[in-house]
Amino acid sequence: MRQSERPASRRAGAAAALSALALALPLVAGCATARRRATVPVYWVTAPPFAYRSLGEVRAVARDDRAHLDDVLDDAEAQAAAMGADALVIRDVRTEARWVTLSTMRTCSQVGIGGLPMPMTCPGRTGALELETSLVAFAVERVGPRAASEVERRWPAPPPLQGAAPTWRERSVATPPWPDLDETLPVP
Amino acid sequence: MRRCPSPDPRRRALASAALLLALAAASGCASLDVRAVRLGPSLAPLPASARVVVRRAPVSLPGAREVALLEATVYDGESGVPDALEALRARARAAGADTVVLLRLDRASGFVRLVASALRTAP
Image 1 (spheres, rainbow over the protein chains, first blue to last red):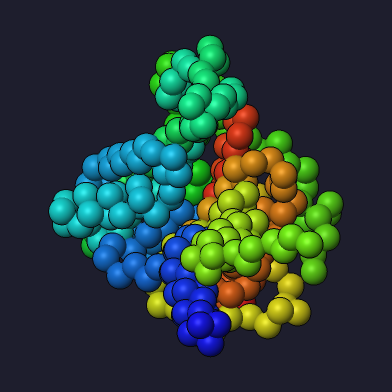
Image 2: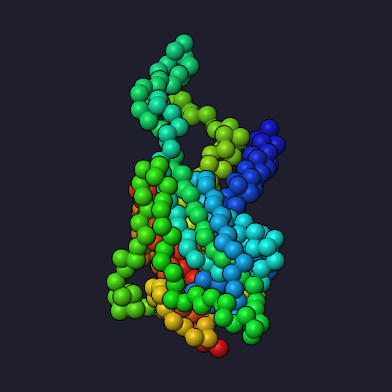
């Protein structure tokens, strides 16, 4: 009997380990996402290496519990591609946060009723952090020498995006409060 | 003398699965999330000993090439901006970039997010 139990428990343990690994891998992969983009060239710190003019402003917003940059960038690139742009020049990206109340009651204890544990609720807010990332960029097209007067020179960067949604309880801080990084941060 | 019954194999399996999940969650993923969006063709990663300079915008880097956009988010506040900066450095190095330009820092209770661009200044 024992001889048959051991392999079964090993199989169960191996299966559980594999299922846990399958669940854990996406978590770890989420930390290390690196994606290749091959649609519209994107520039932020540097300017496109050609004369260009704006086709129009592009705005994209992602709102969920993570609101990652690549989500809004995908959207912005798709918009720029639909406009026939040669490049996308990012102007500003900001992320704001708010606490979303999910319930006004929370589980505070358990009591045994008829031998079964029953959760007891009491007043108290439960919630989750919601993030909103917004991107503002310009879809640009390459221009020839004749249109040189229309060329927009981007650098130095324009002022940051003005006006945040007034409903955000906690306004994000558009820093930069950093000290001179090259002097204060250890460079490995 | 009463012996403790041996645990059910299924219970043990579930316990080991829960332990693995807890270990995965505790590995740092839950508090510091670093993402990279590659721009253009990939470059060979720099060695671990390579110096990655962190600067803040605006900067003038003639001839530099933007390799990737980086995003580091600290959700719990257990690790702060220094950890995020170190993660950005590592990610830039992996993308073949020698410079990180910090473009944005957003902060609220519960999260800090750094957005940066990784550039290659050397040919």
